[in-house]
Length: 263
Image (cartoon, rainbow, N blue to C red; front, side):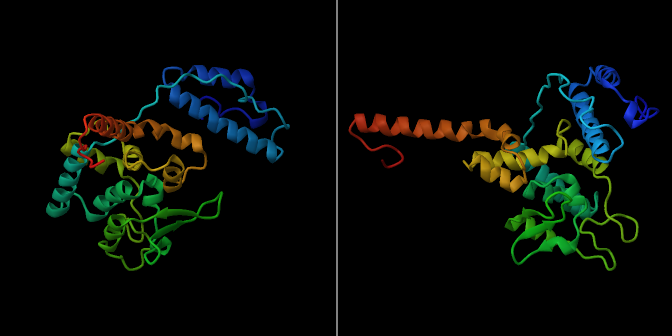
């Protein structure tokens, strides 16, 4: 809005976009994302006749090189987080809905908005699914493992409130998890961990279990395989273990003995 809000949609040109992008050069990821959003807006405007067709000024703009940030919780860090969540739930340091939201993010790999906007009507305990409405596909499915289902079963249903993660006001949902998360991660000494990293951590454990990338993408609800590809390197550790095991088996065979794996 500050940069382009004073201009009509049909007057925003290539120069405006280039300046807008350049002014955000100190924040490459934000700059690229902002232009991507603007590009979608321009396409929307063309489709509805607010701009001439094929005049999107954002097309073919050279993006800034981004440093991908990938942060995953280790087993030790998850143990600390679990201990803190148990503690604040027991003492009342955080209300049970905040703790449940964080646990659901970890156990489902769902996006923050999907958990905060979750309604009981979307929960199918019998099939172990969350059936989320989606404006593009009509419905998105999030699978519930046993631990995610137990989190949901442990939550009270507030009369008159359709939401799972209840807010402070009557019939409302929790809107902001960032402040509680900052308090919890401070207690856990995980100051560099964002809420979205909980989703990454879910994917990292799936990759470490040698799950195929298409299966991980299915769990996370990715539309494109390249989105899931960022987790490919996380399978390196299991591959290393397998490689080590094969080496031990071959060495044992050459020595005329049985390997520790029994081969």
